[in-house]
Image (cartoon, rainbow, N blue to C red; front, side):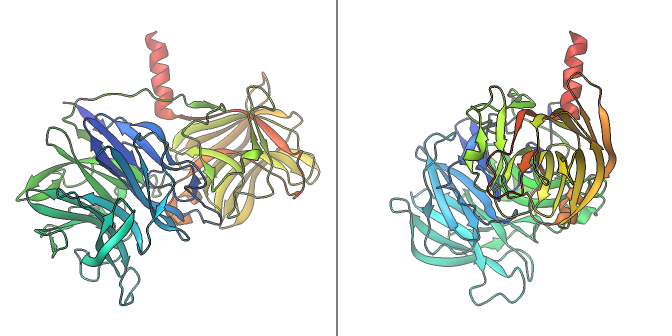
Length: 527
């Protein structure tokens, strides 16, 4: 029996949306305040995905000044029609809903077409068989919300030639439950003469779910599936290892099979540090209603797969800082690219300090990758010689501006030290410290589920422990709140507003997950 393993996209990858073009599948996810925005993945089997680019890679497409970690890009949707790819999303809170287009999904994508009158969030596009295009989104109750989450799903025709909404907007559904909260992530489909409206509801946490309704006419009335919700894990209890299941999108394969991509959170010792990830489930149709993972009714970690598999080459776990930038790398908000130089030292990235820290709603000198596992080694080679108190550079595990863990070299109270510092609810706590003399160090953070271990080495030297068993629970959504998962990367800051000579050189960044290490060891054993 051929199987695949969930999640299909690991680490911070919420709100997946998918489309198919011939035998090729394309998938996008939310990025909130990270830049570039909206990664786009390609697959030929729905299981093995390759990151081929980022849709929003210019500041003109993605202004993020002042956005909090859980603002920025919400719930992108990707669709294809007549040779053109369309990605529609919301930039919260300032810029609203917009569309970008491309003929090549790997880019470049156009500058945004902002949609006047498109109130609310989570937009999607539907191309009907008569050639018309429709916008479907979610907005607050126009009569005024009666309770928190009193929203509705609405529909309006979109003129693609002008990129403007035309005609009237129509409320088409509020969701399956009485006093439903947060009907979100709507998508429209057409099958066997019915229009189907699939949404998420119940909020983004434990009560999250997927529901569906259908109608003979695109503008309704929509009648809910009597078996709603069609997918949720809220009935499985808080100890179940996968929770927060919802926000799905459907795709039909060329041979008529159906699948759903959706988000869910894996739980590790009661906490979800990786945020919401992308999962895959099989869908069959009974009485013209979709049934998700028939006979099981929930997401499975290991699941049978009926499509031929096309494995993709995994990227090197060690990222060299070369031009063009590795597609996996993320900045916070819109980066000041003058702070990053590939030319000042051959084979190294020189990062110049910013007075902004990771604790502010600004763009610090930080580059990270999505955390994909709870068992890993995060490492970098650093050359840093601080001159002023408060200058620091090194590794960071970042949940948001109030929850993080830093492993940094710096000048503290006139002494050059390596320090392990956790930031809990905005307050720094010193977890470990050690005096150092060398400027060139290899820094390592070892993740052992919810325990973190920190050690370093000098050129040709042995590993030296700085701190062990530092609690990682504070880096979870359950503690920190918000909508994001952790990123991990390199960082430098200086308290000086005018200093231009504080910099650190980084030779590489590596996130080596335990499963990758096992594969490497297995290959070496066979050789």
